[in-house]
Length: 453
Image (cartoon, rainbow, N blue to C red; front, top):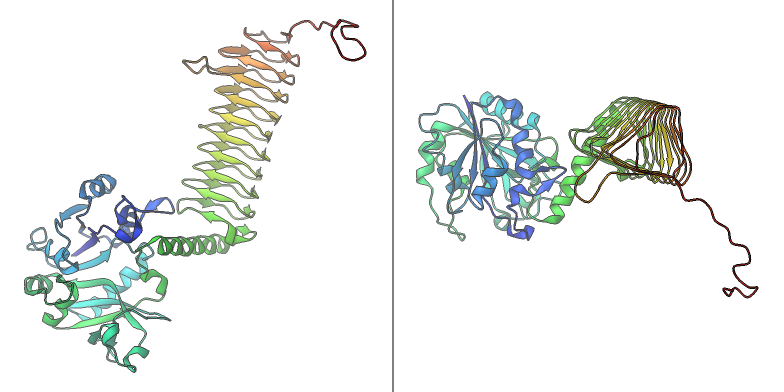
C-alpha cells in the first residue's frame, strides 16, 4: 500500500503575503495543488495534507480535491513534528509513505514514481530524493557509497573543503517504510539550535537509508519568496513551450509566450510574440494567435487568425479573422468565416456564419444571423439601467454607420438600417429603416467674422 503526505502547514513569512505560502498562485494553480496533481497518477491508497497556518483557508481551497485527508499541526515545530501528526491517522497502515513539501511545485509524477521504485528495489527503510546541484552552497551534503546507500549527511557549515566539493543534496522529499518510521518518530528530540523536531533525525534509528538522484535539478526548487516564485513560473513555461513545439506548434520568440497547463493546441498552430493562453483554451490546426493576444477559457477553430485581441470564455469557429484590437467575452459564439475587426466588442453575443463587424462597434446580448454586416459605430443599447435586454438581427441584414439599436428589439431578415439611425421598435423583413432627425440648413446664419446675425 502507498500513502502520500504533503507538508502544507507553514506560513511563508518571506512571501510577505496574508495568503499561506502553499496557496500562492503559480500559473493558474496554487503551489500545493501542483504538488497534489503530481501524485494523481501514483494510485496512492491514502493522501494526507498536513496543515497548520490558516488551516481553515487551506482546507477550503482544497475541499474539492478528491479523497484528500487532512492532519492538523497546530504548532509548527519542524518537519519531524509534522510527520508525527500522522501517527494516529496511519495507525495500522502497512506500506510506504512518500513525504512531499507543499511548496515544491515543479516535482514531476515520473520523479516521485522513480523514488518509490528505487525504495522498493533496495528494500530500504527510507529513500531520500537527492539532486546534484551545480551550486549547492548553503545545502547540506549527502554522502553515499557506490550502491547509493547513505553514509552520512553533513550540513554545509560543518563541511570541510573536500566535502564542499560534493554536489549531492537532499530535496526534502522522502519515501519511508511506514512501520519502521512509526517506530522512530517518537524518538525525535529538539537538541538543535532551532529547538525543532527534524525529520532527518529518524535516519539515526532506521536500518537502511538510500539516495535516489533526480534528473532535473529544477524539480527540487522550493518556493520561499517572490523571486523563487518567478523562477518556478519560468521553468513551467519552458516546459510547456518545449512540449508544444515538439508537438508541432510554431512559436515566434517563444520566451515572450505563456501557456497554462490546461491549454490544448493542435499541430500547425502558430503563436506569435507576446501572446498568452490561459485556462481551458483550445486552438485548432492552422490558426494563428497573435501577436499580442490573450485567450482565456476559449475555443478557437481551425485556420482562424487572432491579432492584438482579447478573447475570454468564448468560441470562435473556423476561418475567422479577429482583430486587431477586438474584445470578445461573456460566452460569445462566433460562426464560421466571420470578421470581427478593429475595436469591436462582443459580450454574450451569438454571431452567424459569414457575418462581419469590421469597425468600432459594441454588440452586447445580441444574436446575429448569417451574412449580417455591421456598420462602423453600431451599438446595441442592451442596458436600461436595471436589466439587460436582447437584440436580434436576422440573416443578411445591414446596419449603417453610427446606428443604435435600443433593446429589446428584433430586426428581421434582409433589413437595411440607414446610417445614423436610432431604432426603438422592431423592424419586419425586407425593410429599409430610417430613424433620424431631418437635416435642417439655415443659410447666412453667421456673418463673415463668424458672429451670429
